Image (cartoon, rainbow, N blue to C red):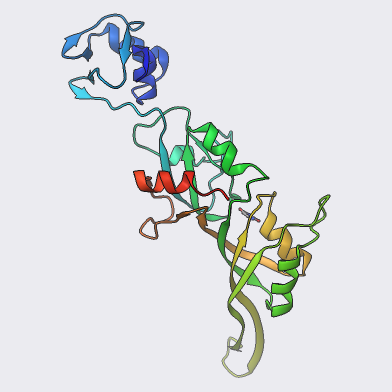
Length: 258
Ligand code: URA
């Protein structure tokens, strides 16, 4: 049970800013248990009282958890002067204190959890907890068993310490492609060194995967996060789409720690 002020309840339930919801109450648009109220500093019980705005019941969640398939071109932040943020992609009524748990680069796609549960975020992002993060990547270069072994040892990416061991799984490595000149006369055989891999890292250093591949002379050209801890990206979500985590997923997320 939580007893909080009506204006906080309304703002947290996504009805507007603290001053906007005060105006809604003054305008007589809010009821508590079917009775119109005019004062927004009145206390409500979030478990028992039924609060309606314009006759529609508002639900109060102390904590909210969303899964977003982050598209390219959007930044993992709550506000940004230049770019669209991941929080702006959650368009339904949401708590105003929502933030992304961890960051993906602007050009990275895939699983991002957004929540207002600061305690869970601290634990999941703690460098000591080693929560697994799995990614799919396309690499400009031919990834070999030597690369797998090097990643398993840890890579010097110019930080104080090498990275912790990362598990690299080669899905496809190096393809040959025939290419033609425009007039179709000369045929040139080119070696196209593109690989597809999956990688599991347990840290979250800045540009970590890109820097790991750079350190072995290759370039990441596409990166997508597939899972974080026990939570997998719902492949039914197209880039830019999101949904709430189920109760089961919230528990799985909380149990992602080693
Ligand atoms: N590693 C990167 O290089 N970028 C990301 O967005 C995530 C991991």
